[in-house]
Image 1 (cartoon, rainbow, N blue to C red):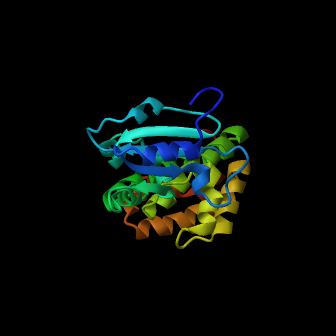
Image 2: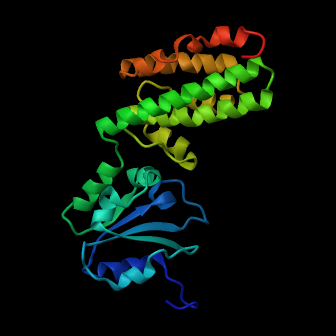
Length: 251
């Protein structure tokens, strides 16, 4: 397309559908989330090419405009080898526009959007340790009168908490933009969505210690049930956040 005729989503889909090397088109981003489209929303599109197939569409690799962002990958790359972890949520709610593999593209999208059991267990353990570490630092900074540090650590802990809770259910954490959208439609089992979001909001803003302790008690029960008790036990007495908050003097 020329500068006078910018490449549009519909025009590109027509081009791709006419190219036998294209085995899949996958739309993600705001256009794949009902109710999230704004006048500024572009079309984020994966273009999946058959391995070893030549295609003139490779000239559009990396194309970015106000209308259309394209990622051109081979089928092998799309299966996971060439995709960064941060793309997992984008694919979890993506829409398959074209599937020339008799449902194969849809199956790949579904697999990428869900953590396997071992991956989820490892991710949960790592995020749990990071959450506890930030929580511990927040409470300790609050005790020592470092209000800004306490709030910043509390905000950090909420990032790890959300990653942990989603990983426990084998789901990639949504981008912040889609967090409320995701939980409104796909709540986390065992968690009240409004209460969870309210706690995340308040802790991030204030670092309120009593609320952090309350949330940790709920998290502890959930992670022990999921088999992560060893991660918590490794912290020993440091998990007594009530006592820590009441201590005086440096440590």
